[in-house]
Structures are given as C-alpha cells and as structure tokens.
Image (tube, rainbow over all chains, first blue to last red):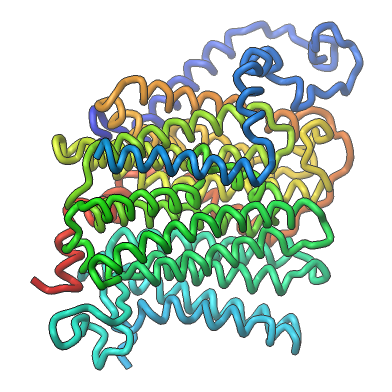
Length: 108
Length: 512
C-alpha cells in the first residue's frame, strides 16, 4: 500500500488515520467551547467588511482580491501575449522551433 | 478467427467505421443511433481492454496488416514494409485512458446535448476522435502516426467548431486548425526526411538505424515542434484555452485525452525512436518547457472569470507536470536510473490522474452552464443550494487537481516534486508554487459559483450527467487511496516500456 516516491514514500491510509486523529482532537477542543451560544442572533451573520446587508454574495471576482492584485503586474504581461491572434500563435511556434533547432543541432 | 490476435486492429477499425455509420443510423431514428453508439463504444472498450490485458500479461502485441499471419512483421528480405501496429504497456495504458474518457463522455452527452444542436455530428466526431487516438497509441510506424495525428486534428477541430450558430466556437476551431495544420506539416516533413535517409517508416526499424546525423536531428526538431504544439506546451498552448473554452463539455474531455496522446507520441519519439542517441540537453528542453507550462498556465488561470477558460488553463498547467516528470526522467535516467524511472512514472501516472480530475471539472462546468445558463463567475453564486452533487464533484475535482492529499493528483505530483528536486530544487519549488496558485484559483471559483446565497434558481442536472461525473469522482478517490496498486500494475510497466523496454519493442517487430 506504500508508494515509493523517490526520496520518500506516500501511504494515503496512514494519512487518513492521521487526519482522523487531528479531527478527533479538533472535536475535543470544540466540545470544550462556550455552551451559552444561541442560534438566530447577529452572531451568525457574515462579516463582509462592515457590509450589513443580508444575503450579500462575495462573488468570484472579489475573493483573493489582494492576491490577484499582487500578481496582476506579472499576469498582465502574460495576458498581453495571449492576444487571440492566430498570427501570434504561429509566430510562437516558429520561435520555439528555432530554440529547439538550436538545442538539437548545437547543444545536442 | 482468433479475436485476441486481431484485437489491436479491430480496436481502431471498429470506432473508425462505427463513426461513419453513426449519421446513417441517425437518419433512420435517433434511438438506433444511440444503440449503435452503445454497441460501438462497448465493443471498442472491450477490445482495448483485451489488448491491454494481453500486453500486461503476455507482452508486446504486434499486428501486421496484409500479412498471412498478424505476427509476420518482416517481408521476405527481413524488412518491415507493411503497416504494423505495435502495442506495448505505454500504448495500452493510453488506450485505457481513451476508453475511460470516451465512455464517460458519451454517457454524459446523452442528456447534455440537444438533438437540434448537432448531437449526431458531435457524437460522430467524438467517435472519430477516439478512433484517431487509439490509432496514434497503437501504431508502430511513423506515417500512420501522422495519419492518425490528422484524423484526431480534423475531428477535434470539428468538435470545437460544429456549433456554427455561435461565433466563438468556429473562431476557436479556425485557430486550432491553423496550429494543428502547421504542426502537422512539421511532423510530415520530419517523416519525409527520415524516409529519405533510411527508406523506411517503421518506428522500430528507424529506431535501430538512427545514428544522430544532422538530418536525424533536424527531423527530431521538427517532430518536437509539431508534437509539443499539439500537447499544448507553453508558449504553443494558446489554441488550447480557446478550444477547451468553446467546445461542449463532453468534447473537451476527449480533447484533453487528445493532448495526452500527443504527449505519448512525443515520449515515443524521444525514448523509442531517438532513445539510442538522445542526450540530456533535450531532456532539459522538455523540463524547461514543462516548468514554463505549469507556471504560466496557473498564473493565467488566476485572472480568468469565465469558468470554462479557468479550468482550461488548469488543464494546460497539468500538461506542464507531465512534461516536467518525463523530462526529468529523460535527463537523469542514464546517470540515476532509479530516480529517472520514478520521474517518468510520476509523469505517466499524472496523465491518468489528470484525465480523471480535469475531466470531472470540465463535466461539472458543463453541468453549471446547462443548469444556470451562464459560466461567468461575476454572475454565478449559490449554485450549491440547487446543484448539490455537481457542487461536490467540482470541489473534489478542484482539490484533486491542486494536489491535495489524499486525492489522486497528490500521489503523482509528489513523485514529480521529489524526482525533479534531484535535478534542481528550484524546479520542485516552482511546481509546488503552481499547485498553490491552482488551489487559490479553484477555491475562488468554488466560492464564487457554488457558495453564498442563491442568486437564481438553477435547473436540475440530468441523472445521466451526474452518473458520468460520479464515475470520474470515484476514479479520483480510488486512484488517490490506492496509488501504489495503480503504479505497480499499470504505471510502472508503462514507464519501463519507455526505458528498459526499448529493446523489447524493437525485437517484437524486427526479431533479434
């Protein structure tokens, strides 16, 4: 059942056993929490940066906003290469072919 | 008739002829067409499994067309002049992947496609694509590799663009067709050069003759260019998100398998055809393109708002992992065979894991589009209230693709991370970074589309579509929980066929 992966090994059943142990521990911690919690109060409302409107949805474009913005300078350069023009697609094929020839003929 | 002996050619011929007969049955009645498709898919699947069982238990299967007996590979004079199919463990492994993908795809298409939206055409082209993929996997000569390369190209472009009432599909098909044609011409030119030099097209014969001359190297460069393009390696991948994004879901999983078959052809060229003269520089080229592919595609996925294109970039990213694994193997196997084999096993295992996980995601996206009439993350939300099963399937596929244990993507990625670490720790770090990016991408997509309050009522997903997704979901779990069994019985023989099995492949066709 153990898969050798080069430097180490992987056994999903062992991992599941460990995960079950961690879950059990989490449940024990959770069970020792406060018992005076009441359902249906404001405590159940999602906190969306001060947004109090009920039923508000954090759309796909908002999640990981900072993460995406941080990557945007890099991604925008890549996006510019994805021009949608088939001429550019073929151009890249020619460029890669030149690199491949360089490696195969000179480097190889 | 000895069915076992003829199974390799029948596995290709049945879907090929079955595809052309499909529209004729549809003219009589659509139920007859569906019955015919079930028959063709069932027989093709059974034949491919039969071939695989023979390969894994007995050894390499060869089939000579036009000979008195299928095993008569050599004409008088000791020259392999006829068309010869040569199926080793890697070919059989890819054949099994196509069976899984095709059967699931057709089951899904039953309710997914509407009759008045070209269902017969889609099923015909899908069956033709399956035949082409099996042909590419099973062929033992270069010219037929090109023929089936073209069969898959034509069928794939048809599947991307047959919905002519929408403008984007035909546009994506046109771009894909241009790229496939240019790439196909490179492959054809390479074959012409090798034929001019050695007067033969048989892969095993050429493998024994190739000496590493300048012409051989030019042919290798052309083959690499054409096959890397069709596999979707960055920066030759740009047709792939267009095609995956516009083709209907049941066709996309066939297109994903098609890129894997192109990778198979690439590996066959590098290890079997040029195995005697390949050098580490070519391995480094494959490693570099693989790393670039997994990273660039993951970065591009981050900013996608169309669920289909987002998953499409995820699919391109996975091609990078396969290239990285096998590229590392190619680079280090001569010096460190044990690590090289683990790397190759990781790359090959990831083919199966990718077909299952990304297939599940594309089918889930198709279900979302059918149920909500929309794929834009800005307009989706709360689908989990109505599409409970689809939500679970999308989550499972996302986690598997991002390599979260204990799902199937983790095991193959771990093999790739650890073996590429030997070549350079930077490679492992970049591969892990791409997985983290993909996790963020799919968490974003999952939250955006499925969680939150219900924005509008979604239509229920037909049961047959859920069953098709359920089969792939079970695959994700089974491959994740029992990776060692799969690697030992299916993947390791396929990896051995590439490296240790090269001489056996040559001997199966040419004798000693």
